[in-house]
Image: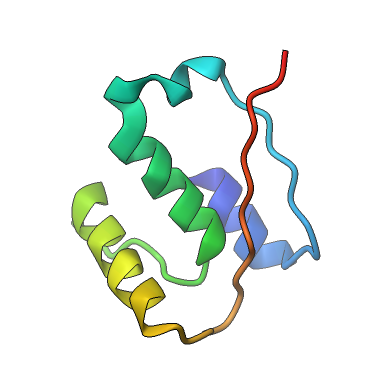
Length: 81
């Protein structure tokens, strides 16, 4: 959550993030896509009391509109050794 707060506060032109390889395991699949979507649309903040799955559904619904609102990024991910 602090990474996304920092992105909203600083509005950088680009973001490079390193994380643990385990997030690419299939058991983390839905949460990994949630993280990617948070980087795509950092201005769509999680509401108080909102579960991460509900927040993710809102972002997915917004992404399907094709609209751009506020801060947004094109997100690419790659596992490197």
